[in-house]
Image (cartoon, rainbow, N blue to C red; front, side, top):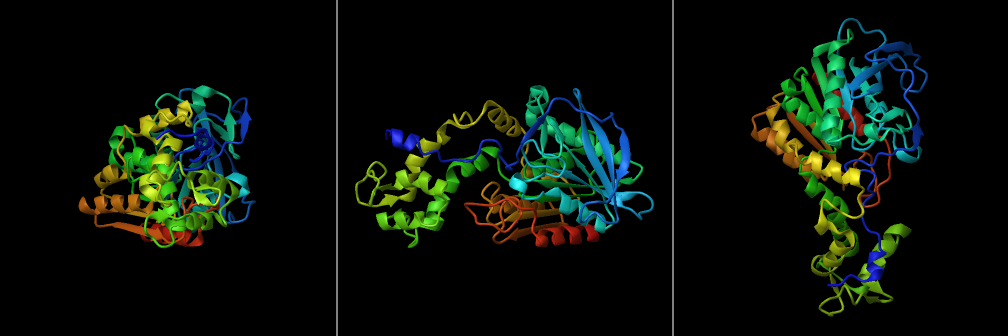
Length: 411
């Protein structure tokens, strides 16, 4: 089939700024200031809501290769002795220590850090390499923003954070828990599977949200291409026969955001009739998989993976690099400690199926202390939101409660 210019103008796909988590970089800084390798600064006042009774100690961590990152160690203000600690590992993209969400939608890690502290834990949050401050504010140094072998560097940076935690006089080095979101689930699993390789203590437990339980090629293929077919099946094909009449196609566009409707319309309709170029057998209906699927494959260029024309060079490099390392399903079974896997049923970036596969692998390895929760109506940022047009928000209270209870039981 020859793809028409009309189809090429239908820009259907995911945002290429992020793969496993839609982080955002909105500001730049010319240099890093106010940090010293391995140093600390005076504890911050509680200030913001939710931090009451929690000491916030500003620290800096040397990642090597010319980068010292800002971080924050928090702990209950009345705590005595060494504490268990939760190290929070971000999703993909240049995220700050809070994993600040776009458009003022809050953050992923602040409510989790506060909840952990309420259970007597210290927490350690950090800016990713290339991020200078909350916002996130990014450096202008391309060597830091786009390092060679980017995922491998992310692993090494995370290991440096764990080693820093283990050296802290506030922390019990035998009680270091890793909590990862999206990309961070893979990082946590890789570190937990081979702690000696990364020069870290064996973690005391692993918590995963939005689980990277399948290979990156499968996940990206779903994000870029497969989710489009899933949406046609779920929201357009009311009678479930796998085909769309003109009426079904037109009805399916009703209520969709303008951008989504504009993306699907030229694939499905010519005026009031089904699109002739998509309806290859000319039966007046569009087979979602066999006909719309062919057109959508061409539009998204998914057959060229990973060298997709809509992906920038760094994202392609990242996809190639993370593919060299085990997924959560491959790595986490090598970890014998307790695991908690959480995923949204509406997650179209790391589908719930990936989490189920990972948990099954952990169980098959003989781990008796594993738990998985799949939340109905919840998407990748662990909030209740529509499946195919998700809105950002911080984690839902039921997620926070689940993690808090799990930490309490493993303290």
